[in-house]
Image 1 (spheres, rainbow, N blue to C red):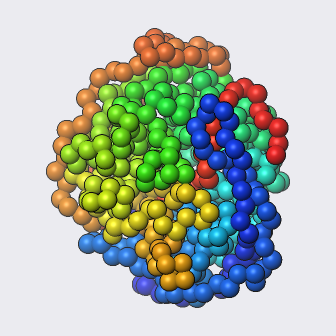
Image 2 (image 1 turned 180 degrees about the vertical axis):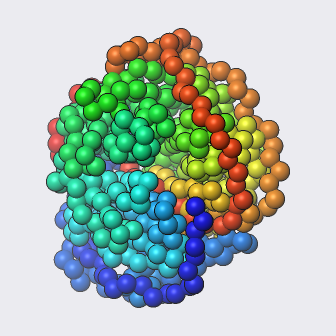
Length: 553
């Protein structure tokens, strides 16, 4: 719907940052797995006042038509010198696009690994931001994931790092205040977790919330859980076939649930559940499709040495038009071991088959270049938006810009890439971690997308380098170059899943499946793009070995 924008007013609500911290350590990775640190606390936070918080003007970074606004500001709207923030997750009120909330990993001082569940909100479409603080000041939390339902209620899934257990919070006032729905750790969960919900009023599972995580580093057991009461209670976790990790999930208009993820390497899957929507059944998975993403997941790349170069993002089209219930998957992967590309695939038959992988970034192939943190969102009219961080213009192959592209024909063609931010160095501002997080996020409406990302535009004179902060930018086709789409993925089938009516489904590189393609509804979406903005979240990725969960730390 049309989004009204209020006049710029730089008045921010009163708040304060709490609980600064001391340096904390990370556990040693498992033998034979990726050398990534786990989410684990070391020392408790230092008493308030241990560190002196200095301020400087908040950053507003303009690049052409696009303006990035700093989100993690103090009560007076100023930048907090010496803190750090990354892995932002964004939610937008679909009934009023002026109301946006972002959650992120908040480090009160860059000298410490101790992080909390920061959040901010805006009531004027992202021009001014209010940062009231953390969900639970002084509590070591991570992996923020925010989302919204169709009425504008926001939800915030947060991980309690010392147990790998999560809980859901809800806001009914645009992210200004939050109420814990489930008791601490009662939402099960694990590192890294994602969740989504059924927004279709006619669906049997309307309002149900679904969550999946890396099975090895879990709160108790399993990899998937469901809530049928808005996040207040969560069912006993179950396992997902193949144990996918580092991915996301979405719900089709018929209530079918789809999960996209990989194996930390070159294997990727799309997993379906047709009965998760049924409150009288224990969720099971009846279709597993092996998907060729054209490369491998990268952990420890030169642009993000202590983290991922990309996760798997899955989104379902619920436009009601010709592309209704199409399934789209995007991930930043390495085709040949050097650098990464943003690769896209689509399914038009309910996840039964997927197209050949298509490279969205349109610069010349160069294995020294990085196109990382690729993500996507689908607008209500069916347009697909994709954003990522990109080093194509950097002589040193590390300085990065936020880039954007879109498709208005279900991913068959994509518009020329558009740079939407100034360049920044992702290797600065690390808060006792060698990373700028593991992902960014976007939410789309009919005219554009709202993006939440981390960048290092602010300079910290005491440290002598730039610092990590969270930014919001509105992207839209009308805000950049005139789109001249170039051909992309042809629907060449790469894999067919092996499906059963029960929860035992396995897939091989050339599998066969008995699955029912999702129905297509009729309607014709049209979009007249004009600028607006979006985000998403996590802490460090974790290796996993299934099905035995580890002891709690």
